[in-house]
Amino acid sequence: MDWIEIGPAPGPENLAILLHAGDTVAIARVSLAAGRRIRVREVEIELRDAVPAGHKVALEAVAAGGAIRRYGERIGRAARPIAAGEHVHTHNVAFEETAFDFDFPARELPLPVAPADGPSFLGYPRAGGRAGTRNYIAVVAASNCGAHTVELVARSYDHESLPANVDGVVAFPHDHGCGMAIGPDSEQLRRTLAGVLDHPNVSAAVLVGLGCEVNQVDQYLGAGDRLAGLTLQSSGGTRGTVEAARRQIARFLERAAAETRVSMPASKIVLGLNCGGSDSFSGITANPALGHCSDRLAALAGTPVLAETPEIVGAEHLLVRRARNREVAERLLGYIEKYRKYLECFGESFDDNPSPGNKDGGLTNILEKSLGAVAKGGTSPLMDAVDFAERIRTPGLVFMNTPGYDPPSLAGLAAGGVNVIAFTSGRGSAIGFPTVPVIKISSNTAAWRAMRENIDINAGRIADGEATIAQVGREIFDFVLRVASGERAAAERFGHREFVPWRIGPVM
Image (cartoon, rainbow, N blue to C red):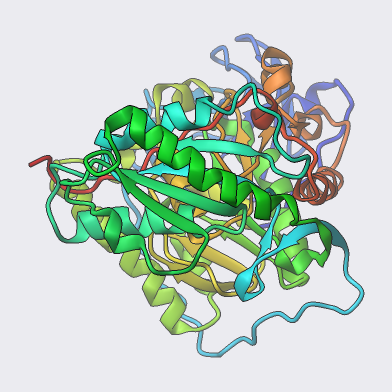
């Protein structure tokens, strides 16, 4: 995608942003009143309607059924005739899912190789060559019946002094693990919990169950001495289990205290890419800036991981074209088709994804949202595609099949082994994760000012004409290295530790 840099001048030529020469709409840089004149492609247009910041204005007349184009791609069809200068949004754009003639790769690309002299960070060496960016003791519930107990265990350390290099004892409560069908749903939960138990940011873990649930504690044991399993039914109930967990944690803390950070190459960073509360500016500023960071990391043989399957629909042809080989491309499309069938079970479609906040922020439908969302993955080749919570093993850009709903998407990424998450937002977000630092990047300066303490980097400076995509991308990359080395992101400072597994089956 060819990006047009945004100038700082306040004149009519900079009131609207043209993203591609073939677009039929431009994006209002600021809120524009009806009657205001803008200049795009050397043509002056008088606005027929008020157009909020981030929303679209028609650059030319479009007949009913004609294509509405943004990013050089069709995002919908005119539901009625649209005149130049009209506000273009849900009231006059019809959604139509695109059928692509995919350009499958006919070659096999090699995996990237880490350079000998690339940038580095300070991390914890882990088994299998993985790297930790944090050093936690995790206390994980096997089911809802263990949820309260794991919270009691973690809270019992709130006022205790821990070794300087231990980031904390954190709980993973949730409401799954029983009353669920044994099969794909229970298998996915086991994969998720196994991933957060055996995570590079976790020195050791305790798994707590009731004892009679579907998700049995014994299924996880025997994989090493960094995991202990307890049940309330065999450990003396709530009080007895808290005491037993603390005895196990005392042993784990002694070992964790001896673990130290060492210099490690940036290729050891597995960076989860997520967006939440997106707006129209997300695809102009924050997402392409994060894409610049992703490209830089991929070139170093690090692993940026794009996620949120509903939010690549309408842009999947761009990823297929960049796939390492046809097998990866077809696996990616398989996840989309699997997700489509999942939605059909409930009478839903991908266009049910954009939230009211997304639409208030100027995103008309899922096609427009997805074309901006995939920019987080930059322009690097797609090296692999994995299912929800599967272990990520491939260097370079990877795609993971997750929901667009942020909490389970982060859970899947973390279970797959990401050790840092970069999260863009247009409306503002405060979400975090128990053991993985979550970096917040705002797409516009208004969100930055409204939630200043919750956001780490303001990519809105791009739309303000104060910085380029490349400059903010380098800023994100440098901040990722600092956070990987121990600097706290805003979500960590506030103690945001949301954990929600993805439940796909019925409640029994």
